[in-house]
Amino acid sequence: MVKEDKTTWKSNYFLKLVKLFDEYPRCFIVGIDHVGSKQMQGIRQSLRGTAILLMGKNTMMRKAIRGHLEQNPALERLLPYIKGNVGFVFSKEDMNDLREKILSHRVPAAARAGAIAPVDVKVPAQNTGLGPEKTSFFQALSIPTKIARGTIEILNEVHLIKLHEKVGASEATLLNMLKISPFSYGLIIEQVYDSGTVYSPSILDITDEDIRGRFMQGIANIASVCLEIGYPTVASAPHSIINGFKNLLAIAVETDYTFPQAEMVKEYLADPSKFVAAAPAADAGGAAEEKKEEKKVEEEESESDEDMGFGLFD
Image 1 (cartoon, helix red, strand yellow):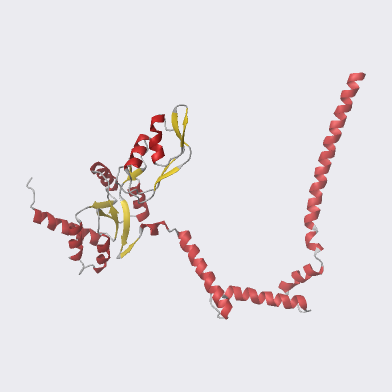
Image 2 (cartoon, helix red, strand yellow):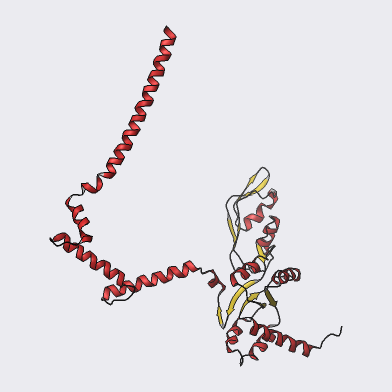
């Protein structure tokens, strides 16, 4: 097989990237720091049939996008995010499902000195199994310990490394001695491109319930403002009708004027006992049944006691 020259390879890459942007309306911009070739191969295989993962040099990706801006000007919004070790994942599938599939391919990794921590690292209270000769090592990291049964025991949970901090040599050595692999590496979704709009992947966490709740809160705010200034709208009309009915009800209660909806209220105010008599009667009936059952049990117990006494002395 004849290997194509560099110019032809670049031209084919530009055509492929532009074709993908035209064919797929959505894509992820993903970071691939600390992702090995074997792990990348597994990710490609899992995405086969649902998405296309394309990597490349940042300069080539920028050049391909700039050359296609006349046909698709919205691609210019991607340029500020093409920095570092990044690539594109193109798909027509649901973005939430695709994100879960991408994030499921993460590989645990030990802490290395000089690496930037992607998460907070906390060492739990535990018996380390290490000998007393390592005590000075823990003291240097200000970790409270004690000697228990000839081994070092960490007394309290320790926040060893904070998010985005550089891992020191001592911290990395300690985690390796404790056989703790605190980090996991895989594709990191940095931005989402959807039909000309670029947004954070955290937007994908918004559910229909969240949108509905925000919408209802906005309706409630509109209704409050309209009621306060006396401006009727669809949002405030039900509240205005209810408030008007309350005013009519108040007038009916204070005067001899009445209407069907006010008769029950006036009857309740005239004799409240009519509306509470049913509930106490039911409670009284239940209490009477309980007392009757208790009395029956006591009688049975007394009869059994009498029978026992008669049998002993007769």
